[in-house]
Amino acid sequence: MRLCRFDTDRVGVLRGDRVVDVTSVLDSIPATRWPFDPGDLLIANFGRLKHLIDQEMLTGEPRHLADCALKSPVANPSKILGALNNYHEPADDADYPVSTLDRDGLFLKASTSLAGPSDGIELAWPGRQHDHEVELAVVIGSWCRNVSRERAMDHVVGYTVALDMTMKGSEERGLRKSLDAHTVLGPWLITRDEIADPGNLGLWLQVNRQPRQRGNTRNLLNDVPRLIEYVSSFFTLYPGDILLTGTPPGAGPVAPGDIIDAGIVGVGSMRVEVR
Ligand code: MN
Image (cartoon, rainbow, N blue to C red; front, side, top):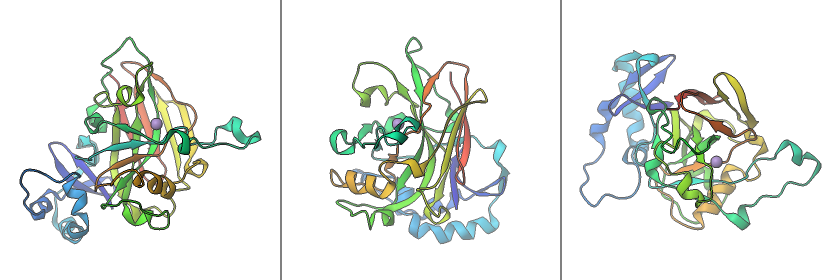
């Protein structure tokens, strides 16, 4: 299932090049009141909503995908985590590539940095260099802590394409990567059952139709289960938490007016404007 959020908080499911509006299933999410639990309510309730979504698919109103303004498919992650230097570089082939995970760990991005393809990316500091990084994003589906790599995938609800935008400079990474709209997710969340192997996915990025990045998740130094095992040893993961798995070679700068196209084969692709 390819689940998207569009226009003003509509929820849709892809059927070919159409989006079927299934927003009414949100009425079945149990009522909550302050203080809210961390995490995304739609993701937390996805298991029980799935059959309602399937029913709504039969009768819901289909719309053309091109007429839908796509938002981040996950609305309320409690946190966004990112891996560093997690791909073999082509130059590494002669040497034994070394993961920095045990030394440097992962970084955190503010959840307010989240945006969708239709939001675009505003460069709030136009005098500074901002780089694109295309990544496979893993969406956590259920609470977990200290999960083993053997059980890690049980806690994944699905995947989406991510742009981990980065302003270059001397400040802490978590600050430079947390500017508004510096985490773009889209075009939709594809559920885990539709991806046979997250460790063999081609990903690519173009700027103004010029190829910039190309890679495959088979070249990840730390695969998805290992990243979940590692990060869950530090803290509890909640439904909707986002794990950015690192970017392949070719990250580079963008400028206002640029058009970014980014995709993962078998997941989807998105177009994002830089302002
Ligand atoms: Mn990154």
